[in-house]
Image 1: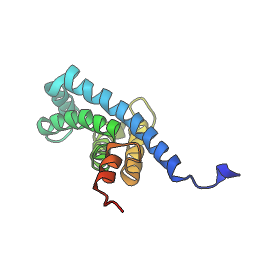
Image 2: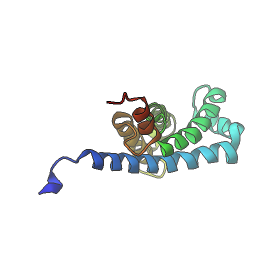
Image 3: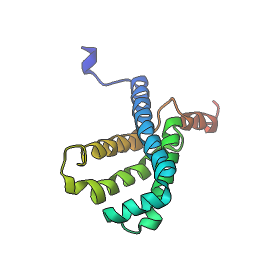
Image 4: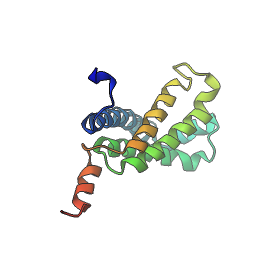
Length: 144
């Protein structure tokens, strides 16, 4: 019967850790690829072709956001802010890149929508106990 009751805080911390690590892997790989394989000019060209507005500005921002944001999620640093920014990235990807291809993978919104959902969950839950954010919060908390 215990499987049917609400999780305790320790379970939520573990769940947020899993979400953060999965998302970190996704964004680190995509950010690395954008930065060091395609480069700013390659991503700008792709974004131009896809109809992303102001691609010369947006492309470098997305490259850096995905790489640095992936590292931040891995560490659990500035987690809520990073999750919101990456959620905006995924919303833009849905609107400008994947929406015309329907729902299903490989080009549809399915996978990006999953990332968006996980990022919103992390933005709402925070980083959890196993994170730099938690360490910093403990340091700032007044001692009893």
